[in-house]
Length: 72
Image 1: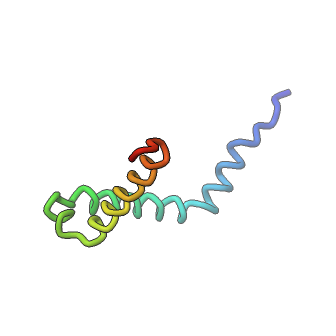
Image 2 (image 1 turned 180 degrees about the vertical axis):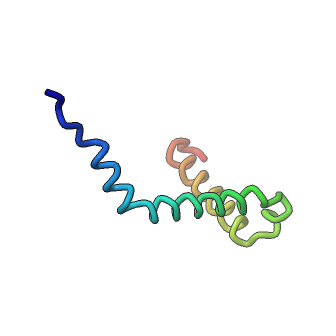
């Protein structure tokens, strides 16, 4: 006698329940990727968001250096 395999039943039920989330996640990922790849270096130079994060990254790097290099 063959044993019952629950996986096909499980995946069928879960697909019915979760397909809107999965499709929405995929569409959102495609849109974000499309916009991200469309940015140029000129856009980054003119962006207040990018400049603020560059300053933050530099400050964090200096803080880490001061922790490991005592005379810095």
